[in-house]
Length: 222
Ligand code: CA
Image 1: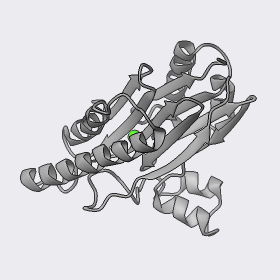
Image 2: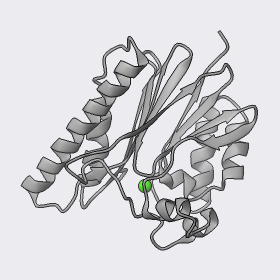
Image 3: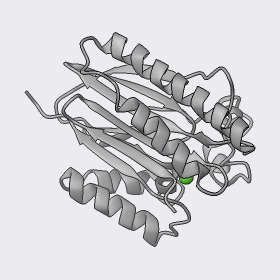
Image 4: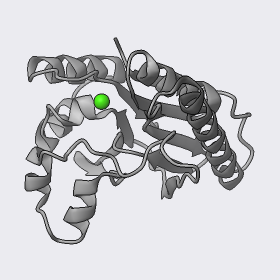
């Protein structure tokens, strides 16, 4: 069973990764539903407008998942989602949950999203170190997910694009298995298809306790 889903649409500058949760086939259903919803995003005209449109599509997916859970008696049919939207010289990142977006710029890896988890909250409050958070028994407990609550809050940031930027969208199946240093190393060598393969293979070799999804996007000099 693969509860992850992804979207790869370089034609309109749109990429996404979703990581579903729930009993039976619910997790698969949830991640697929949010990714399919985002695929309806029209060809972007203005970045800000596309961000708001994407937020609406995520909110609609949220509503549908709640309705489906209510109808089927499932406690929750939920999913994370990370979205990268690029246009001209800028990009927008949107996210809910603990899937992540990283950027490799000048050989330095930076995490651009902040997990919606209980432990991340404690790290922000200074109650836990980032290292303690990784091995904490609550590490996988989300504080936000698509399908979890009536009012969904989507976080977003805008980032300027630079030629040579490489972005990584991934599910926690990757980040649970590989250190930041290892991801930086693997991400920095090769073309995107090889890099994706290396990331997934290394995560599986390191334990592979979960589904692993990685999307690598290069922005070239114009
Ligand atoms: Ca996962």
